[in-house]
Image 1 (tube, rainbow, N blue to C red):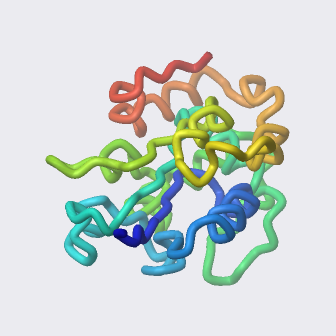
Image 2 (image 1 turned 45 degrees about the vertical axis):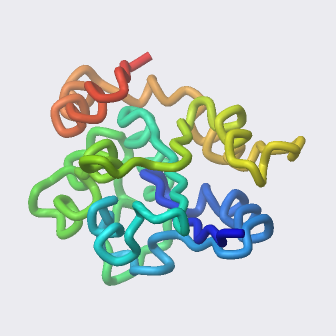
Length: 198
């Protein structure tokens, strides 16, 4: 019997994934997030992971959670405006609107703009013949997670409840200029997965 080492990535704040990470660790013998394995310096692409682990082998499985970029930015905004400020990171706690947050978060002067903040998930989640084992969508997570064998018989899979709660009324945060900015930065994700503002 082949042992599967399972790696997980997501384009949303890690704090909202804690329940799912704990559940995966409890149900999968060899499970780890990419961040815990390689660090939080940047978003690692599937091709970079393949160079280390040979994802074409039967030994590795990958789990990815994708999210509509408009919701992604609203979720990061809600997260960072209440985050304790670490001196090594940008302070967003003074942002009172999504516009102010995007002005800092999506600024090319932001140290993490190119390595994390502006990264289109669809670009790093698929390269050539490499593909994700389990591609879960934020909006349909409770259904999608059942495609993972270890979760097929789990009745309560509402691991992202806090994130869903944070996004209540998220559309009201946006101005037309904000929508245009997110559409420009995340054009690849929007086109690849047919995301809209709705």
